[in-house]
Image 1 (cartoon, rainbow, N blue to C red):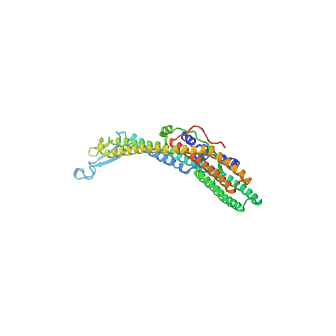
Image 2 (cartoon, one colour):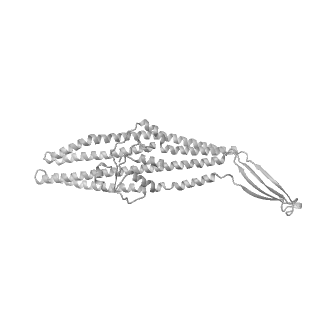
Image 3 (tube, rainbow, N blue to C red):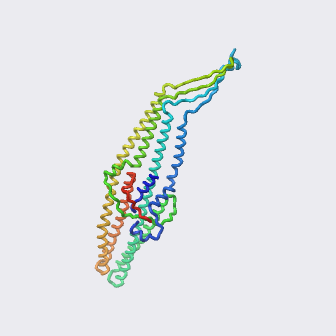
Length: 424
């Protein structure tokens, strides 16, 4: 539960589509925490670990067994010749035997299974976090698609208003018919773009609900703030937190398994002591006697050498893979961090500098167009520049949130403790 809480915290990003929230307020909306909760409860990928855990529990039960007892019966001096003919001189021995493990083999076997159980738990946590990360990325994709749809709707309305103004100007004889034709073409293209944006939203919505095995989602929109800028964390701090990376944790558990296998291989160097005890019946004298025996295999140490060499090599290979993965993760973290900072800078510049200027320019151009001072081409250029900048802002905001999620996935914890999710 502590891991699930951390995973939910990692996944909760700042994501109510400011432009889309107003139009979707009356619709059925879905928050990120609700999407994550449904995924954890119903995702098919997460259901199979129960069977794997049960299988390892059975292996551990078997590994904990001590050497079995064996009962044997030997009949000697039967059906021979002379005085040993028939059964008159027969000797019947009934004995019980087993082995005493002197090298800690039982504990070594159990330690290997225990290490594999811990590795399975780590694998399950890793898969759970990967699934949650994937759900969050898809959530962002749907959120960005909703923003793009809102922009297309606004653009379509603006083009329709411009076309109405053009129609009045043409009827008044102040504008050429060719301007109206260009306006009609722009409106037709806007309708196509609007249909495409709606189709993308529908497709992204189904992709999101597929994570909890629902091909017919009952929500119409997702709700969160795509444009909230995460609190920056210095790169050295992120590198220090890389020790909490779930992939490194998984590789560390693999090393632990290999260490346990080395210990098991070494335990085989000391042979088990085999014993037997029983009763022998001597038919000729009609007497009975106790029989005791001990045996120990020779050369057990040299025979275990190959297994020890193999186990040591596997351990060294696992350690090398873990160390190599850390170096690669450091490089990946630095690259993702730079992309994250770049996306934040783009959001700040587009939102605080570019868009205000383009909106002001568009309003000025529209006013001049209504007075007949600017042509339709000049107005269309101003509108296109504004729409392009708005779409660029959506893309930069999506990259900002996605790179943040990647950073949180790498360090295995949230960048800060603030909960950004918008309450429904």
